[in-house]
Image (cartoon, rainbow, N blue to C red; front, side, top):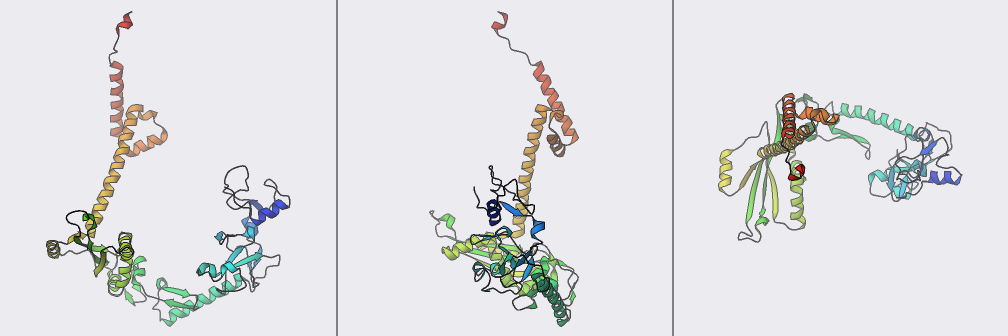
Length: 398
């Protein structure tokens, strides 16, 4: 594999430098591709030493200065390696101008927010002026945003939470959107400034049921081709961990559509939904009976009635329990195989003749009594081999 040299490397080679003789402010890039040419590496040859380049002065097309430590590198885009070594480092535009006509054409009107808000910078041999620089503008912006944050919380009379607040850079103002799912993910407890009260100390979850129905394609080609099925999966949990029942009740009441979208995005459902939508598979699902509970509850009589009506009933907790048991069984099987392999090795070689790493493994897998027992088996086996009669042939007496 041969990578094209970066512009820094091309210039230094043209000036007579070699891989063994180069300026002190550069070094040979790491991550070579093999071979004798050490300049054939991931970085395209020579690279600037970070301590050196971070202290250099760079400038945007509109004249804003910045230090190299502020610039960004490492982006490969539109056939360009946006690196210091190609004099194509980048920065985030402090003015957030997406269609600035001064910056590189590849960084405007892309439809990608990261690229549209990025500007190319070039190294300049000028004295660095902090006032009016990108660093100065960023400090002023951060200070203003921090002051507006305090004012925003005061405007809300303290009914604001950092988990639900964010700064809208396009509208240049703080906004807040209360989402109880965020509270659950952050495992909030105690006083909630948004609700203005302490959260319920009782913990629970948001449960829901899933109804799946459609054509049973597994019976195609049999006498039962075309039969339909209906399956109910009951007691699915939405949150990975228990949350305050107050949060669960709010989420179950206000965020049902968000829950449905989240469930449909799960891998176990999304593939079949795609097949039904794109390839007209006779398959559909419905999320219903969304509720907040401290623990899963079951309606046995309803389950029996559904079963009598030909509906397959599955409880999510039973599936989870069975999956854990299968996982434990497989883990135990793997451990047992390791034990059997180690025991056979001890019988053949003896514990004292094992390599150090195998000794440590044996001590983790087997207790002292078993190790002593295996040594006894080894000694008995060796004795039997020594006492085994030797079969002699007629030729031994001739």
